[in-house]
Image 1 (cartoon, rainbow, N blue to C red):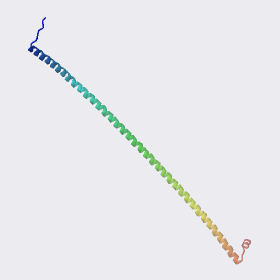
Image 2: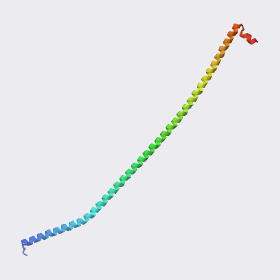
Image 3: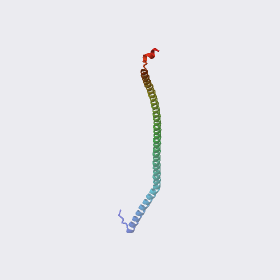
Image 4: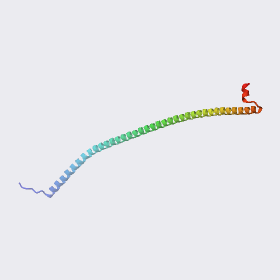
Length: 150
């Protein structure tokens, strides 16, 4: 068997056919990639949308939790303020009662002091009157024993 040499045209034609086949394979591969690319792109978009939905759901859950915590804090603060107001009202009521009691005690003490002073004045006045009467009787010459005898 002899080795047959190819002519330039045959070689050029074989090279062109090889390039054409290579180009066809590249086009077929590109076509397959193109068909798969749309599916992959759709899949990526679906995954991205799902991710966005999860992020939105997490954000909404976080906001709802923050709102719940805020409302709980506000309710607790309102309850604390109400309790403080009630305690303050009770303290003021007790202070008013204490002041009223102190005023009553003071008035009672003042009344006792007034009565005591009136009694003391009456006793002092009686002693004074007795001294005056005794002095007057002595001036007249009547002794106090004489009055008892009568």
